[in-house]
Image 1 (cartoon, helix red, strand yellow):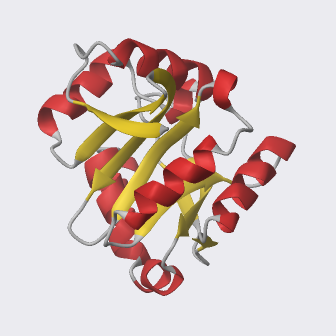
Image 2 (tube, rainbow, N blue to C red; image 1 turned 180 degrees about the vertical axis):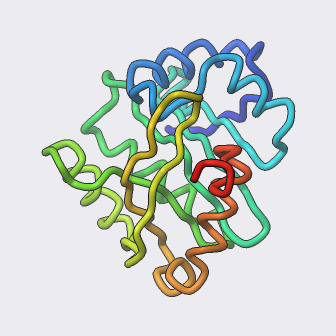
Length: 182
């Protein structure tokens, strides 16, 4: 049995497991520092951090943002001990069934076997690539922007409202102002 357990702050007993997986799964340019996550918990009510549990054991993480017009999956990872067991598919299907807004996520362009597999994983779950060019801003100063793909389970919404999605992500998630970085 898989369950999603909401984490409210960095002092939650499950946060250590989440943070360890977060650090080991995502490269530094695709994640926040501990202090950065603590700030998001304290200042961004749209942010949600979930620990995935399988029969009471830590099995993964899901970070998402619930905005007015769409939901953004920021980070999703399954613990190595639970990979290739269908848990990721089951968790995302359950998550998507409980969301009544379009869901958006970023994924790497397919430059490696792993990034290609990740892209196909999301496609199997009903996500589609938008047709727009997108650059992911850095989480921390001194890092560069990365070419990424925006995917959504609502292709028409994501393409029609791409600029709104991009601007929301830049402002709320990354605290990035393109006008200041020209």
